Each structure stands twice: as structure tokens, then as C-alpha cells.
Image (tube, rainbow, N blue to C red; front, side):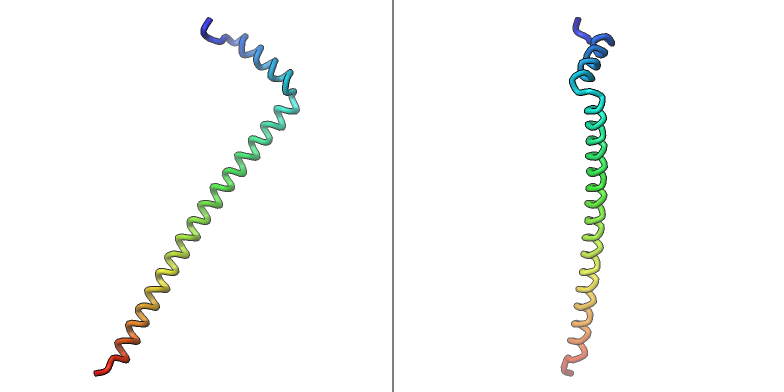
Length: 81
């Protein structure tokens, strides 16, 4: 009595089909698939944004180092003897 047999699941499936109809279930599955695609696209965009931010940070650090090196070089060359 505690477990559901195959007949119970068949009755539930028939009732669901009667309530929602074949078209509604197809639309629902299409919406679910569209949601999954949108989620994957969003995750890919997040990964791209993280890579771009990391590259930008590395570029700015390199530019700052170059600027600091140039400033140090200029300061040492203008130093009075």
C-alpha cells in the first residue's frame, strides 16, 4: 500500500494529459528548453566577462609597472651629481 505501482503512475499521467493537454506540455517543455539555453548563455557571458576583466587588470598592472620604471629611470637620470 505504501508504494506506487505502474498503474498508479499511468493514471496520474492520463490525468495530467487531460488537464494540460498535449499542446500545453509541448509549450512547457519548449519554455524549459529556452530557459536552459538562456542560462547557459548567461554563464558563458559571465565567463567571458571574468576573462576580460582579468586581462584588463593584467594590462593595467603592466602599464603601471612600465610607468613606474620610466619614472624611476627619469628620476635617476635627472639626479644631481
